[in-house]
Length: 240
Image (cartoon, rainbow, N blue to C red; front, side, top):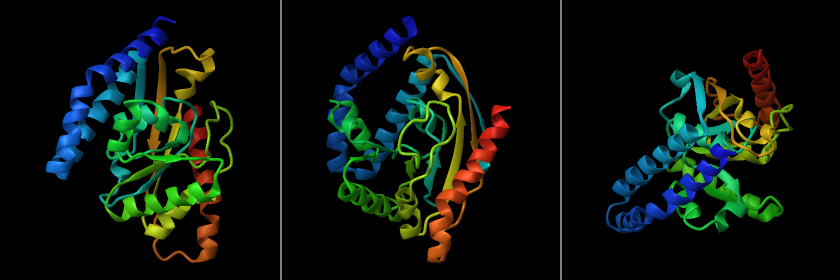
């Protein structure tokens, strides 16, 4: 319970204390977009790392050499709330996360998320989903990596859910590689403890990127199942 309260106080306190930085970022956005990008990315990464530290999270990471220089659609299995902190705090260029629409209503936090190019998706609207896909394609073509959980919701450490095809449309339409990231252990930080934060070790493995350029329709249709099977196999390995 102490860590849970500490996390709440840290997040709330940081967002309030960082308000002047947010105002400065708005100024930078108009004056020098490149500096704005660098400034916001640095602050967002630092925030994610501190959240992991407050939670007492240890991360065992492998596969950084598999990250290509070109922009990628990063797909990850969604075990828990802390997946986003792992991605942003430990893996380069993953601040642009596709998040649920409800987070867009959270004051200050949503401003920093937008500064990190986060995309907010309304899962109840097919039209809104397509708009997010189009925006994701635009980001990828502009050199911005996009991170998404194809399961669409947290599985709380249970068997990986079915992968939704819409997530992969971003990669195929932009002809960007898919970077699979397998995560195990984030549910033990929060969800498995009755929504109380406890220290845990999280294993993260970055797999080789999967090219999408030149794929025919049949191959594109097979991508969700193919990538899920690959990730499930690796997840079973690292769980042992």
